[in-house]
Image (cartoon, rainbow over all chains, first blue to last red; front, side, top):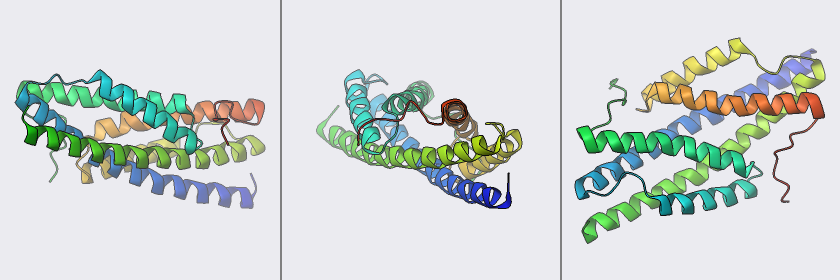
Length: 106
Length: 106
């Protein structure tokens, strides 16, 4: 790999690192919201998962993915991966009132 | 669930939907970058995966997750999920010169 290609690789990696920092912070905000949903659902005795809502979310995310030139099948797989964690949190909240996997650092 | 709780649930879901739209668009940008990396690597005969780079990324993302009050174990699991897709793309680029799963909509 020549110097120009190495410089190009380093620049792309800097962009990937910036995007990843944004993704991590947005995921943290998403879990803040879903944990609030979990507490609301637990307080009112609603089930942790909501298949109708999830179907609507998947249809919307697939459409957004196509607009963004992202593979819609990957977007759906990614959503299911995140939702599995959310449902795990909701079940913990329903059982213990809190999420045990939250980091303890202040 | 009373009206106030339903209104609160609807508001949280609007925030989640906004965050998800941002996440999908950032993931699309991330894959644009990683596909450019894949083409560079294929052109210079470098292997698709780079364990040293991945170790650095995981350490950085775990630290960012703790700062953002996101479970660092989840951040690592999430990263590995995304990287599995990236390596799949790199292998496709090395074999065929393109990513077959890219959406065809213009």
